[in-house]
Structures are given as C-alpha cells and as structure tokens.
Image (cartoon, rainbow, N blue to C red; front, side):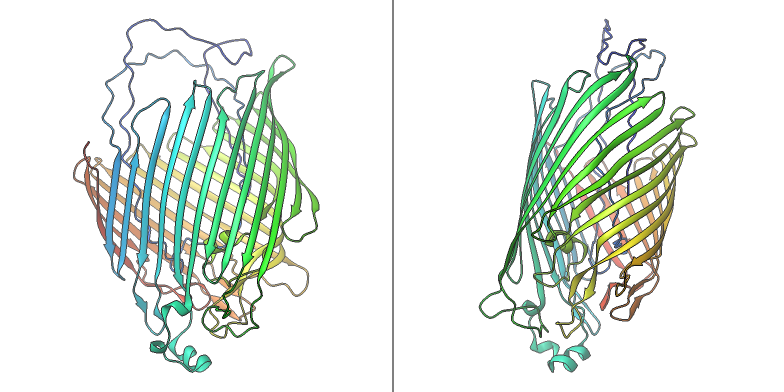
Length: 570
C-alpha cells in the first residue's frame, strides 16, 4: 500500500525563495525542554498462535525522502524559556501472567547531549503452559539490542545499531489422537526437541547521513546492513543490504521548489540448508531424505524521482527499475511506476492523493519466520512483485478530529501465503505457497484526540481478491478487518487502554479448512505511583475465544498479566 508523507515547515516571512533565511533575536533567553514523556511500552504477549492482530495481508510503504515545503506566514510569537526538567537514563518493566507467562524489559539510554546519543535494551516474553489434548505450546521471544548516534560538526550524522533475537516455538499443531493414529506413539513417548523450532537472528546496521539540505547543495545518505540467521534443522541465511541516497534541491522558474532524488537498494542473500548426518527433520516427516542446498540470491533496485511543489499541488514523478535474481538464477529486468499527485485544500486541512507505484520484495527465511514460525526447514524462496494504484484522502476536521480514507487496487505476482506440507503426517508444518492475484482494498480510519486525556480510533478494511490463473487458490486472506482503540489518561496517574478487533474468516482451501470469524478484546490499566514506580494489569483475548490463525494451531484463552515498572534514580 502506498504511504504518502506530507511535510510542512514554517519559516520567517520572506518574499524571496531562499531556504536559509536568518532571524536574529537579542535579549534574555532561557531555553526550555518540555518534560519528557515517560516510556510507556505496554507488555505484549505476542504468542504467534494467539495474537489476533497478526493478519496475513501484504501492504507496501515506499520509502520517501520528501523535503519540500510551502512556507506559511505566521505572526511573530514570544518564547519564554523555563528551567529544564530532570531526565532518567533507565527503565525496567516486569510482569507475570497465567499460562506461566513471564515478561521482562530493561532499557538504558544516554541523557541530553547535542552530539552523542546511545542506549541498549533487553526484551523477553514467553509462555510455558499447555493446551488440552494438544499438549505444550511453549514459545519465547528474547531480544537484546544497542544503538548509537553521533553528529559531527553539526553537519554529518553517523549511526549504528546491533540486535540479537531468539525466537523459540514448538510445532504443536497436532492432537494426542492424531499422534497415535499417524505415528502410533503417545505424548509421553516424544521429546520436545523432536518438534522444536528455533530462529536466531543477529543484525548490524551502520549508516552516515549529511544534515545540510539547503537548495544548491547535495544531500546524501548511505547504510549497510549485515544480518545472519541460523535456525533449527541446519538452516542458515546471510544477508547483505546496501542502500544509498543522493538528493539535490533547486528552484524552478525562480519561484517553485523542487528536489531530485536517486535511491539505490541492493539485497544479497546466501542461503544454505544442511541437515545433519541422520537427516533429522521435525516430528512426523515422511518425505525423502533432505538434500543439502546452497544458493545465492540478489535484488538490485534503482529509484530516481523528483518532487515539485506548485502552490499546494505536489508532484512526485519517477520510476523504479529492478534486477531480479532472487526467484531464479536468471536475471530479470523489471520496471515499476512511481508517480503520485497530491493537492491540499483549506490550507492543509484536506489532502487528496492519487498515485501508481510498485516494486519487488524478497521473501527470505527470516521474513517467513516472522509471519509463520511453523514453516518447513529449507522452504522455497521467491520475490513478490506488486503494482499498486492508490487514491488517498485525509481530512483534519479540527485539531481533535481527523478522518482518513483510501482505496487501492494491487496486482500481485508471486504473492506469498502458506499451505500445509504433505510430507508431514501430523499436518502441523507449513510451506510457502506462491500465487498471482489482484486485490481491491478499501479502508477508512477516524481518530479523535482530546489533548492527552482521550484518544479514540475506529477503522477497518474490506478486501476483495481475484486469483489469476487456473490451479491457484486463495489461502489465509480475510475478507475484512475492523478495529477500535480507546486510550485514557486521568490526571497523569491512571492510564487505561481498551482495544477491540474483528477479523473475517480465512480459508485454507487446499486443506479444506476454514478459520471462522475471530474477535478479540484486550484491556490494560496502569497506575503511576510516582515518576519512578508504576503498576499495571493487562488482559488479552478477554472474549475467551480459542481461535486459530493457522490450521490446527489453537490459541490459549484469556491471558492476564500483572506487573510493575521502575526507574532507578541516578
């Protein structure tokens, strides 16, 4: 799906088109930095089998570097400085819930500094209980990360971050009766290691970006991403991603502003599937002995485009060229549109956009594991191509009420879903399934914000799919989704959240199964005793529905977590 970003800036009054005007103010001045909002990250029990919001719909958000603006004339305002407030450099959050579900989070970050920013975080969530007739459905997600950013001479930003994630799951999608009928074994006869899945992911990013973006100057940014995935049953995936951007601001006809961009993105993968000497695979595998597989894959994308601003009319014009050597060893050259036209009305209160964009995206083993952790080792890899035609509108009816609506028609080629793998007799392991389809999507969102006391959001999407070609099936695609979220803030002491979600039925036509309508209710209440200590209670799936997002994988019912957060005084 296209995401169009509109950037508006304010500058001093001037009848000239210059970017770098200066205003010199003399007099006493006391700088003020408003009190920083305390980190408020609610605990998330993202059981891959029980998270209702986990929907299987691909949308695309093209990268935008728009820096155009139309200056608005405002009256001069006097700014009165106030003393700075105290900041804290750490934050801890601990909780525990039913189904033996611990939660732990720890954060550390640097304090105020104009040049250097750094920090680290640790996050863990898991569950170690079991389901009736299915047995243990353990899972855990642990992430350790660190980041740093340094600004050199006020003109150059150097940044880097590193993160390690361990994602532990069980292929638990079979009952005791299925185990007995297919393998002739009892639950007590098998070990958890026989159907365990672990994905370990280590990723390092390093980038540089100049901060001078005036007209007549070249802006640039470059980033390198190096990632390594090693998983159960002999799977490894090494990824190298290099991106670069160059932009140049200019004036058209001595009046209109324009910026030219060039974005380059190169993705390289080295995949290997090396089963051990015994050919060990997840429990229930009955296929041929797996072979060792090694292959390299590449995608190169070059996206030149330009942005122009003509009295509230914004033109974005370009194209994306792609060299696809991911799906096969043969390099295929592809061209995708990249054109968007936007118009503002009533100032900036109403914005309408239409556009056509597209691109190609790799479906790697890491990508698959994030969507469906129950995939078969050594699964087939392809890249998805998409052509998106979008109309978008945003109406800010007031400072408190905003309405958004969009309609999108997308042509998807090698779209990825999942189907049960017939080589696994327990019917609990999936393989990627690729098909061509055309998707119509219509959606709307309404947001209401009353200062910081109340925030309300209501929205949803309708989907209509048309499968292209014979022998193709539509798998795991809902026909609609709805959501409602309400956040409350009472006197900065009591905080509440209520969320409702509704997800339409999904079919697995190859397996002849239908996942019925799913509905979810979740809520959270937090009491902040002081700036350092708070207590929370969180409840997920309060409708007590034992739904399935993937065939044969039932979820737990309601999950309740109680905990506290604490900040150590310096």
